[in-house]
Length: 564
Image (tube, rainbow, N blue to C red; front, side, top):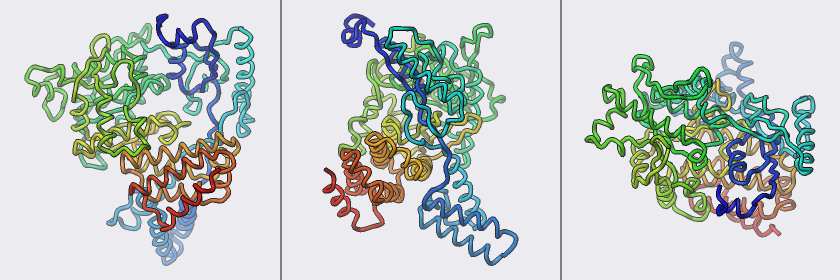
């Protein structure tokens, strides 16, 4: 940082005390680098597991009744089987569970039961965290109680000019109990050690799940894919996302046993990996670019080492790309893309929700991803059309999610990166799979299509009465969280087409048609109420939502008139 940089010019020697969520190490690191902040870690919102709601709960009751009747009363069992499938179709859960027209009763029931179990596994927030206060649901946990006290003490110490002890950053809900108690000055992993051996083991499991899912869906191996690679997730997991891509390519890091630092790359023989290699393209975030030049160099070295192997084209698409380049291998082997140095985001954040058509969104996403990165210093150079070629050749987008306390509808970035890719691919005449890789439990990775992932979040979290009651305890901020959920869901509808009308019906019924929630929004945060109505009405007018009721347009107008 020089004296002419804005943070230095604005802040100078002024101390910056920055309470920061302990599960976001990347952004905390950025605050330290830019403004020398003392980042005092605080707890994330408490997570709880709760029962199913609405149509899913009704379906669960029928499935339980069927299980009790199984083997006892054939006629009752057959009647219940028909009723379960009919209820699943009426509520929209049949589509979400992946039921096909040609499925027999046994397979349909198996899929419905599996979908309900997956839905029940989702942990949801029970309100928000209040700084320095332990959540009521975790009163028996000494670490959370200690965290609340430590947060208060650290803030007082920092304001008094005293030292705040350092502590690691990470997601406690993902097993990082070492980050407790919070109330410490956050630090992160040594980038020279990423990905760690443990991260590589978990990355290999995740890569196997991606391949299993693709084989099950398409009956063949994926040949090429694009993976989103973000800075905070990399620090939080020890580099699991890097490891996922390396494993798909058939590589692994080489570590120095004395220091644990990564010193190189090893390409595994084809016989060892037992399958063709996958051509992986990495779409890196601006924060990843800033924090991890050594990892960019490592990935680039892996790409070029794999491409240099003399293996059949069908087994090694990178080697095939090298051979077809006519000796001009550097541009043909560019596989790490991001925004220009100093630029951040997916390029379409400011376009979402403003009436932009899908072609415009896709063009904005491709234009922003203008630079290829690599070489010994991890630097970037403009490569016009380079990333578009990789999107056009991809069988799927892989979007990992590791933090149990955050989902696709809780940040604008997910809708921008996933939706931007989908819009760009559509503009290029392609419809690759959009796969959400759930690694919140790294030992049990789950690859889900975007539509299934969104349906799980809406039914399990967004319309869950426990989730809504938790946010209602926080007044205006809680109402704003509901508005953000709707905004992100409609953004996915605008960019991907992966949001069925049934999900928007559910959100409307829960947020605006329910008198209790409707009155809460109008009383506590009229701006949030207005935003929810406007986003849903825009989705209806653009043909993204076809409500079950014919009077929804009039209802939204009536609601808008009630907003102060």
